[in-house]
Structure formats: C-alpha cells, structure tokens
Length: 65
Image (cartoon, one colour):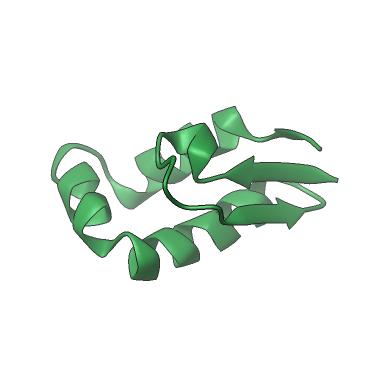
C-alpha cells in the first residue's frame, strides 16, 4: 500500500495520512484533504504552482507504508 502524510509535506501538526494502491490515488486523496483542512496553505502554494504541479510534487513524495 502506498501512503503520504501531511508530515511528509511539512505539515507536522496534522496527522492525516492518505493511503491507496497507486501514487495518483494517494495524491488525489491528499489534494482533497489539503483543499479543506489546509485551504490557506493551498492558496499560497497555488500562487506559485498549478494544481497539477502540486499533485505531481505530492506523487513524488508518496512511499510504501
């Protein structure tokens, strides 16, 4: 199973972990979480990167867990 946590992305105060069978599934779930739980941070990130760019960055940090 693949996974990505908010801590993997630098949000150490959030304990959310996205899990899935593919990197894309994990990144999609993390994007949905981030849009609601970390809306301010996402707006900040989207000023510099597209949504696809953020998702690709997340996919690069997905690991087996």
